[in-house]
Amino acid sequence: MKILVLNGSPHLNGATSDMVTAFASGARDRGHEVVCINVAHKSIRGCMACEYCRTHEGTCVQKDDMQAIYPEILSADMVVFASPIYYFTLSAQLQAVIHRTYAIDIPKNVQKVALILSSGSPYVYGPAITEYYQSIVEYWGVENAGIFTANGEQNKSGEKRKELYRFGNNL
Image (cartoon, rainbow, N blue to C red; front, side, top):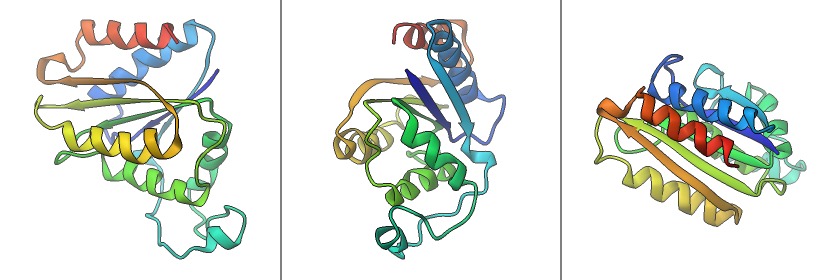
């Protein structure tokens, strides 16, 4: 299975990246192909709602780093969305990528998705999880393979790494 991880954390060595690394290691050890893209370090502008993509076969008028991400999404069997929680929702960088998938509509190859979230507090996940279910799971019509959160002392803990490794390794 080809798994694409879209990491929306601007912190290369932060808690979200730590969880992504553990997940990817487990999935690779199981024999899956895993592509991790740190979208927070890409130049990706927000959707302009210009509708160019609707009249040009899914081609976005904007020519930025999203052009390299579209083929990865379209060829993935599973997409994992990873983000720190900033003010109760996904990072702006990951939001921009999600919004820009409008150009390709529903990626037909994707069968499963998952969500990895990190935070300083256990009480901030609700809006991000709701958005994930409504705008990804339900709209794309795909299976939710799991939602994983870490907060406070759970961040970068050995136990959380094991949990994410097992998740990847059990796919």
